[in-house]
Image (cartoon, rainbow, N blue to C red):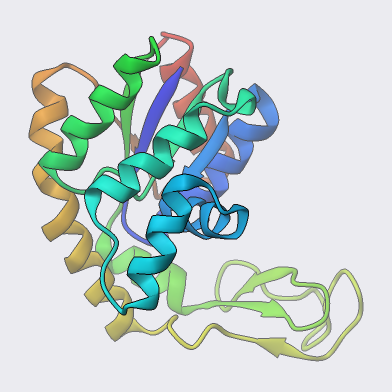
Length: 217
């Protein structure tokens, strides 16, 4: 089973992808991670990508497709792949179809985590983590049980991501709508798109996705 997870930054794609990896043995394929891994491993496409990046240029769709193809050939993707951050354009969507078909595979579903923009801004701007152990908290939804003390390790140091501010979040959401929205009609026409409530509790979102993958939606 091969799926695409869609949703703006903060919608919970990473959390749900991690669950699918743990529960179903699927593998999350993030283009950024794959690119860095291919360069480090010195694969044929990784060598090309390194030369392009060192020249200060953007990596082409052809190189990205090559890296995805190399990754799909690895044994650990046999139980399925979760595409995150790819495809973003109609050309990339077409390239992915070809990559999968060449390996006797096909796309099973395109799952969009739908969110309320204002609620998502609130969700992201309020989050912070323990600087020592990384436990996550939120100004409104999950404060430490004892003020300014981590529930897990007892540390009094906390940190926030510098890009977790309203302006940055709104910019990223606008970019998502502009870049990702165009591929939805392509998959709508193929009957592959399913939508879940990305604002629901993480367990509920996971249950909705499981129902889709199990053919119970």
